[in-house]
Length: 454
Image (cartoon, rainbow, N blue to C red):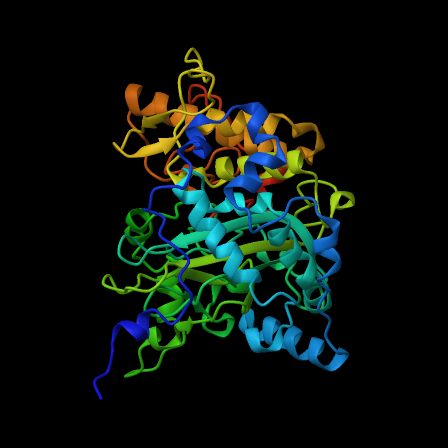
């Protein structure tokens, strides 16, 4: 009997292709206005298998809990290794198609021009957070802070994020409690099987990372997450290089400390803000589904307060979900290749809110001011600290465009060129009042390393 190799790649239900034409071109992002985007009807037409503000759906899904013994085991594993993994076989999700329906929704969103993170519009994404919230609290003491993201990796076209830490506070030790638990963790849930063939997470365990608790060297507050800039740091201060070289004996490679975390759909990887992690590049001829994953973060209020009041949980109103997802596109826009427009340009285009525009690299990016308008619909409901972060990123996007056409971009700051006591860089540029329209990040944001990568 001959072996059918394609069956190896396609051992997962068909979810469609993001490159396929949508069923209804009138649902495309470029043809929407404010009225359609704030209506349940539009989003439910896009993803009819999902729900919005449906309490009946919520009532069919229970929170997961752990026995005190198992909770202590996972907490110990998180404190020792910086992460723990819960296989899907241990998690009674309630709906066997929960992850599959969300994965299909990501395909439907992408077919219509939307980012994968817009699955946060739907109840099913928030229900995942709700179901896992008690396990996260039992093992870390943290609560949902609304930092939600969704990732789509087509191994034939690209890879996941390059190596980074999720948070880079000035004093890393203060981002842990006295019992050793981290004040910020991420839960990463694959919606399709995440394998070494189509891309999965890779991490450096805590015990192999000298900067995990004590802090990195000269790289603190450098925010680059691009492969190009990351590879520039090849000296002893580079966090990944330092971890790989640390504590190795002659004849034993530090690369052997790198740990792959393949995980089937429905599993959960929970890791701290200090773990070095990245998404791998899959096999370019992989014929199975893309790697799709949903993530949410939980934190202590004294480290990073929730973006909006938890009183809106477990199912926030649609307008708040829309504002949050739009603002997350702004905050993480550097990785999504968003682009700003001149203030004199009008957003409205034939009744629609969206146009495509080439960015400075010649790549198509959605206009950041479109997402900014969506955020401002409910900006008053967000924590002041998060509003500052969003506004900073909007100004930075405008500044980057201005800087590209008017000045020479400065090299990434180091402790030798700190200003105001902070070696704060955004894409290699130090922003302050002297830098045209750019403005420095507020001190309270700087001190926790909000969203900054090494």
